[in-house]
Image (cartoon, rainbow, N blue to C red):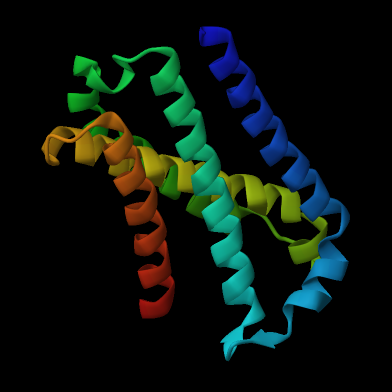
Length: 168
């Protein structure tokens, strides 16, 4: 039943949109709440890991439901070329973001007022990173089932983010 997977994809997409709207509406309250330390970790670290985990989980679910709709989705020959394409898109996106942020002047309260733009940019780069990891696992990874590959992609992407934050 292919229609069921489309409805689940739509529900996932709507959930992420609702989450972004919620984050934007309650940004100032969440900012105060997140300042506390939990388990000796700063609140900003915990909130960013939760945000990244939810966005990566949504990407994982969307790809998983697409795989369920069309079983050959991850076996398409185009996946062999996707890593190179995504690296080029990622590089161009970084360059455009650097040019954009160095050419405009942001107001002092930009962190709260423009949080939705920051959330969209973060989600964009997270999705690019998720698909890059997925394409690398399909191209050079072990021959595993699609479900196992998707599961490894999710956990690898999340682990890479956490390690990046700890090391930087």
